[in-house]
Length: 130
Image (cartoon, rainbow, N blue to C red; front, side):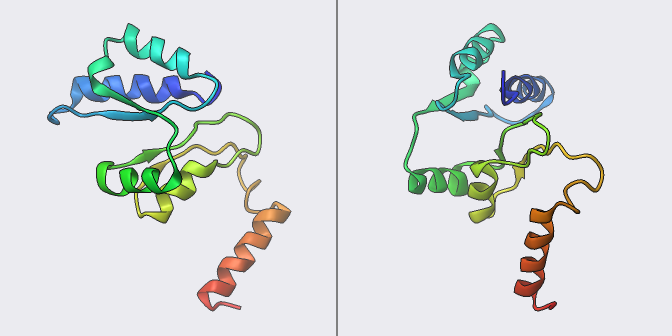
């Protein structure tokens, strides 16, 4: 699966077997090219009762769900070179919800790219460290 949703689904299955949480749910959005494969995997792992599928929602509704219904957000686990994260990270961060993401950079590659240096300079300006 391109964004490695299978890692999340299989990890959640492991969590279900080890957790003492009462009726935990994984909330997924019906978005992306691997929805059918993800649904098949969930079904094959007998996890249908622990997964809630939501349709594509307006951002306002998504922010509400993240803020009031989720303990954590999860972005994509991209394996593409120089990949950071998509909109999921920003959506979680904007409402103060922890977010699990992956990045694919070699050591120091992100810190010393032209775009990241400009980004770090902006953070310094915002923090008052000119």
